[in-house]
Image (cartoon, rainbow, N blue to C red):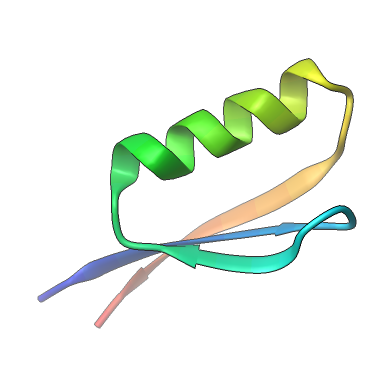
Length: 44
């Protein structure tokens, strides 16, 4: 089973990442800059 992290924002659109640390950092960066985002975990 592989985990993929999907982050959706107006600035970047839909981004799918495999690494948890990178997804977490991107969500943190968006939040720090006041940009709303939605995220979810996809297990395949």
